[in-house]
Image (cartoon, rainbow, N blue to C red):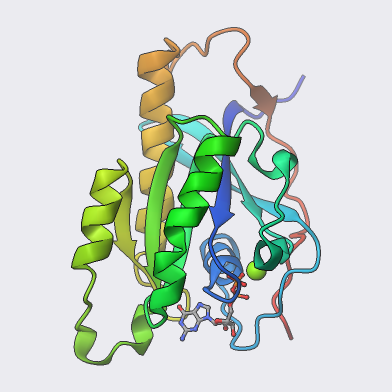
Length: 206
Ligand code: GDP
Ligand code: MG
């Protein structure tokens, strides 16, 4: 028997146009690295991150696209059983913000309508004098029940906050809607034994 505590696994999917910084956000959060020349992901992949929220051990399985987002061809497996979605756009590229709406539409068709969502305005380090014009994005986020964050994978702004917020809201939802008790997880919930640390499948360009 494993001596390690069991943990709940939450599936989080990254969505957004190509080059907005999805892979960079994940790599910054999980491995604390950033690559100026991050290459388009070649394989659909996920990384896991363990965290403890209010004493509850959680494993976040973070799914990143394989670059198929450029053809809007993510496919059902990507979305299947997702607990949460992080929608990313590039703060310098208004078109990528406009297209967040398309990603939300696709998400709501492919996953549960009640899925937990957050929107990240990424690459905030590129905005001079920290003058963000994010009012429209903030009100859009509110209108769809998503939380809004300003992030920079490059300098690390907002990264822990966005992932922690998502994991916390998924946990709260599971506690309230599925009767999950933090101390005694309900039978039938996805409970896994903690596995040994895996080699990251997504590598920083070197
Ligand atoms: P993805 O296609 O959405 O996964 O985007 P990537 O993570 O591959 O990033 C695309 C490009 O944007 C790469 O050259 C990254 O180095 C760059 N990038 C990603 N995040 C940031 C950021 O926060 N700030 C800056 N300045 N560049 C970033
Ligand atoms: Mg990528």
